[in-house]
Length: 403
Length: 176
Image 1 (spheres, one colour):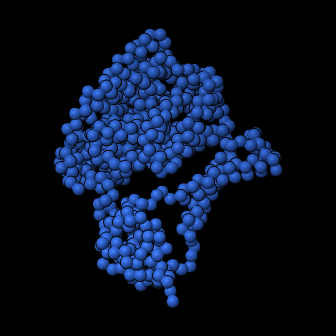
Image 2 (image 1 turned 180 degrees about the vertical axis):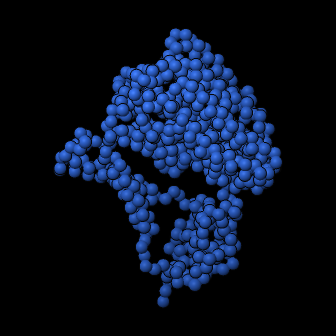
Image 3 (image 1 turned 120 degrees about the vertical axis):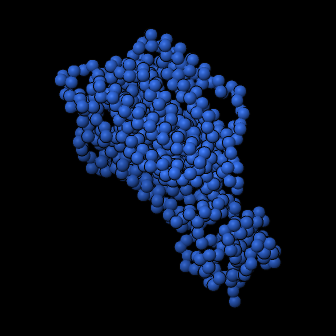
C-alpha cells in the first residue's frame, strides 16, 4: 500500500459535462420563479421558501453532525467522505444569508409575532422565547455558532492536509466534543423557532430530535449519491465498498430512528389526548394532509425499512439511487407536513414557489459547494487513519477488530 | 478401528491461511472449513461463503412476533374482554404497537438464535477435531484449514498436495 503522500490530489479534469451547468440554471430559474411568486402571493412565497430552507438546513446540519461523529468516534471508515461533508457543513454561513427572506417575512409567517401576549395565555407563558427581539438575536446566535463550528472543523482539517500534525487531530477532537453539545442545542432551537413556533401553542419534547432524525437520514442519502459521483468521476478513488456499505447501514438505522421518534411523538399525544397537543395532528388530518401523513408512515419508514433490510441492498446502486431520490422526496414532504398546514389548512397544495425555492436554494448551495470542492484536496490527505480507511487488509485492523 | 474424518493443515499467520482458503475454494471443495483464534476480515470472501440464510429466520420470526402481538392484543381487548380505557377505541394499532414491537424483537431474536443452532447442526456433544491435540492451538496462535473426507473432491494424496502447495508446514489426518 502506498503512503498517503503518494496518493496526492488527482488532477481530474472532468469539467464540461452538462451537469456542471445545472446549478446556474437552477439559480436563475429559481430566482425568476421566486420573484414572480413573491409579487403574486407574498405569504405563499414565504412559506414555500421556509419549507425549502428547512430542507437544505437539514443537509448542512446533518453533514456537520457526521463530521463531528467522525472525530468523536475516531472512526476510520469515514475518512474518504469527510472532506465533502466538511464543505457541506460550511455552507451554513451561506444558509445564514439565505435566511434573510425569512427574517424579513417573519412577522407574516409566525402568527405569534403579531399577537399581544397578554391576550393569549399560551404565548404569554412562552414569551421569554417567543418575542421578536429574541427571535432575531437567536437566529444570529445560531448562525454564528454554526459558522464558527463548521469553520473550525474544516480549517483544522485543511491544516492537517498540509502539516499532518497530531495537533490538528487533537484540535478537531476538542471541537467535535464541545461541538456536539452546541449542535444538539442549536438544532433543537432552530427546529423550535423556525418550524414548531408556527403553532406556538404546541408542546412536544421530541420535536428537536424529530427534525434531527429526518435531517441525518436525508444527509446520508445525499452523501451516498455525492460519494458515488465523486468515485465515478475519479475525484475520490479511495472510496470503496466499505464506505457505501456503512453509509447504507446508517441510512437504514436512521430510517428506523426517525420512525421511532415520530411514532413516539404521535403515540404520546394520541394516548394523552390533551387538546393543546392534539390540535397539531388534528390540523394535519384535514383533507389531503391525512394522505401525506399516511405516505410518511409507509413511504418514509415502512418501504425504505423493508427495502434496506437486506445487507446486500445497501450496496446495490440500482436500489440506492432511486432510494436517495425517494429520501429527498419524503423529507421534503415531511417539511411540508410540518410547515404548510398552517397556511394551506385543507390539504397539501404545491405552488410554483415551492419548486422555485428548492431550485434557488439548492442551486446556490451547489455552486458554493463546487467552489469549495475544487479549491481544496477532495479528501483528507494526511489523516492518521488514512491507511485503515482504505480497507480491512492491514494487519493492525485484524488485531483491533474484536478487542 | 476408526475411519478418517478429514485432513487438517496448520498455518502460522492469517495471511497464510487466507491464501490457503482461496486455493481450497478455487479447487472447488465444499465440505471444508477454516479455524482461527480470532475473526479474520475478508475470510468469508476468500472461502466463497455467501450471506448466511439465518437472516430469513430473523425476518420470519419478526413478522410472526409482530402479527402475533397485534392479534393477541386485539383478541384480548376487543373480543375476549371488551373494556374501554381512557375513551379510546377497543382496538387501535397505535396502543398495540409498543407491545407488538417488543414481540417482534423477542421472536426475531429467538428465531435468530435457534435458526443459527439449527443451521450449524448444534448442539452436538462431540466433534472429531476436538480429539486432535494439535488442534487445541487454534485457541492460541495457529490457523487451520480442515477438509473433510466427505467432500466429493477429497483424495488422500491430491488434497494433501494442495495444502502443501498452499504453504502448510504441518498436515495430519484426523480420525472420526
